[in-house]
Image (cartoon, rainbow, N blue to C red; front, top):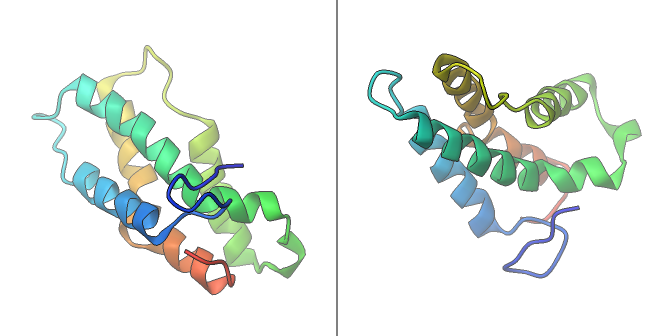
Length: 122
């Protein structure tokens, strides 16, 4: 379970959620022809940590019986992305696609909204 460094709790802080959103928006601005492989690899690692922190608490709390199909679908999609990062030998385009897809939940504030609507504190 991820612990918020700012709050000392098992929930992400509002600042951490905002950092994840800023990072995701930065990554969504990447262009394949002008972004280096190193930048893509760094973004993939950073996003995995930030997005994982946002949804890690709801996954660990085990309240699945109260979740609707949209909730489960959202969590399954994000969990799949977190569990399946690009392999070290992946083509740049694969890494680029992965970070763009992984950025979407944080950039459109879906993860933050999901956490808030479940009554969790950010």
